[in-house]
Length: 313
Image (cartoon, rainbow, N blue to C red; front, side, top):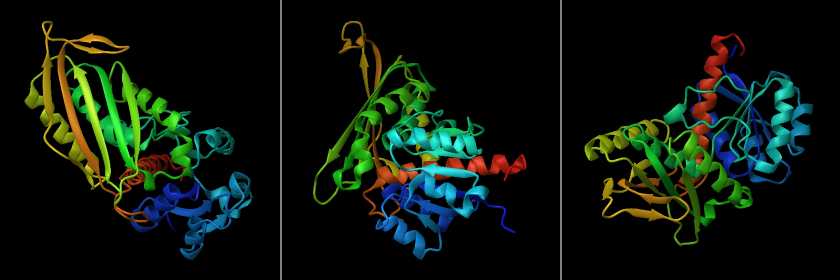
C-alpha cells in the first residue's frame, strides 16, 4: 500500500501541468490522483489523461464529485487570485490542505529556502510569486547580516512564459511580492516590479535585487548570499548568480534619496540572478514557472511528511 500523500491540482495551464509532471517524475512523498481544469480541450488535461491521472473540466465542483476527492490530502491551486478564495473555502471545509500558487495571499507566505519549516501545519499556505521565490532569499541573505531598510526587486520574464493567469494577476504580483519581501525577506520596506520581455529568442528569467542596509562587512554579505544560492539550488538547480555581488556605500556627505522612502545612508547591495527552468514541460527559459512549481512541490512534500508523522496521511 502506498504511503504517499494523495494530491490534486486545480488549474491545467502551464504551471499546473509542469507541477503535475514534476510530481509524477520526481516526488517520493506525493501521488497525484486528479487534475482539474475548466477547458475540456486544454493540453494539461489531455496530458493528465495520457499519464493515467483522473481529470475533470468542471472546476472545483467537478473535483468534489470525483471518487478521488475523499482521499486527497493536499490540493494545489494553480488558477488565479480571484478564484482562490472559493477554492480555499471549499478545501478548508473539507479538511484539505491547500498550497496556493496564486498571489491571493490568504495563507501565510512560504519561501522554502528561508522559512520552509514554518506554517506547514496551516490549512492554506501561499507560495508568493515567481519573482518572490527568486528574490526573497537574496533579501533575507542580506538581512541576516545587517538590517535592511529598503529592498527593491525587478523580475524580468519572457512574455512567452507569461500565460493568461500571470497576466491577469500583475497587480496582485506586485502587492503580494512587496508584502513578502518585508514579512519573509526581513526588509523594513519592499517594492516589486515585473517586466514581460518580448525578446526573440525568449530570454531566461532574470532578477535584480537591490537592498539598502546598515553598513556591514561586504565579505559577510557575499558569503551569506552564496550560501543562500546553494540552498535554493537544492530544489531549483537552474538558479544562479549572473555576476559577483556589487556594493556601494552612501554616507551623510553622499546620501541616497529614494522617492517615498527618504534619504538613506549605509550599504547598497546589488544581486543579479538568472533562473533556468528544468524543462519538464515548458522550455528552459520559463524559469519563472519552474521556480514556482519547484517551491510548491518542496513545500507540499514537507507538509506530507509532517502529516504522516502525525498519522494524518
